[in-house]
Amino acid sequence: MAKRPRQRVHKALREATRHPLMLGLFLPHQQGAWSPSAAARGTDWSFDYNARLAQRADEMGFDLVFALAQWLGKDGYGGDIKFRENTLDPFITSAGLAPLTKRVLLIATVHILYGWHPLHLAKYGAVIDHMSGGRWGLNVVTGYKESEFRMFGQAPIPHDERYAMADEFTGVMRRLWAEDRPLDFEGRWWRTEGAYVAPKPANKRIVLVNAGSSPAGIAYAARHSDLIFVTSPGGAEAEAAIASLPEHTAKVRAAAAAEGREVKILINPHVICRDSEREARAQYRRILAGADKVALDNFVGAFRSGDQASWRGHKKATWAVGGNVHLVGSPEQIVDYFQRLKDAGIDGVQINFFDFLPDLEFFGARVLPLLRQAGLRLEA
Image (cartoon, rainbow, N blue to C red; front, side, top):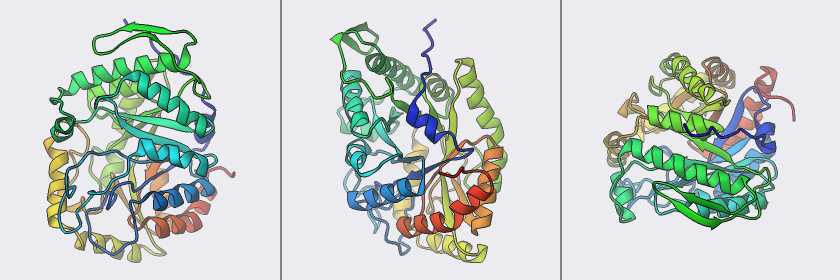
């Protein structure tokens, strides 16, 4: 039986997880972010816009910022809005955000099976970690879309084999970060001879993140990840999502405990918050009414055609809003939803908005103080 990796203390992660509920911001690195809707907004995929968001989230006391990575062809998911045609790469942008932020964790998504060697990512990740003062993290994804593998000239890899490869890849990276001697390794998929990384990460390891939902994905995340993103088995509607989560989060936590590890579980809600529920519901309906049918069909079809286990319980009608759970209401209602998510086993929320900058400012002014009053966030 393979040796279980030891869970070292990570200073930045310890600071982030001191709050009863972690707060993350899902940066809109993709044109249109999560919402294939043409409803009016100022959200932009550019680096400058994302840097402003990351800096404001940092100033507000958010614990992490995060973005997904995608490889799409011309026009992205199509439609009149050319949904996600322009996309930033979060690995590259995390380096750009390092000197612009002070305390927030910078989580970068990398498809590790698209031509990477563990030595590359161990070295580059350690450098960005130093640039950020020990605030860099890696969201490991294996990819599931056949079109993405084909873009790299690769044949698709069966689901469980992808996670077996990720396990070997991650094991090599962790050794390169932690061990102070050259590494000779002969694996099934990767090998090294005299491999060495210096400087080491600031904490002798990197914050690792994963979003596995299948048995193989959960097993990988339980073995390696500090933060595990989950999706709602009950769909995006808030009540159904909250009801479905306790069993799922308990399963994830039990898998980590079987590895002798503790993990933090996060979910990705789309927050639509206004002064009143009536105003928030009106905005929700505007987003849905603005759905770009072609982009929506292509977006939903891409998820449903793959072999990943996430998002299966989600209804197509609500995908124009995006996000894993739709939280719509007044500031008081949003705080109540967050408390109920915590009660369902969620340790943190990775929030996305529709009109990011003004919605983030409203959240900071109206919701954050209530989160502190509710005991979900500690004072700085």
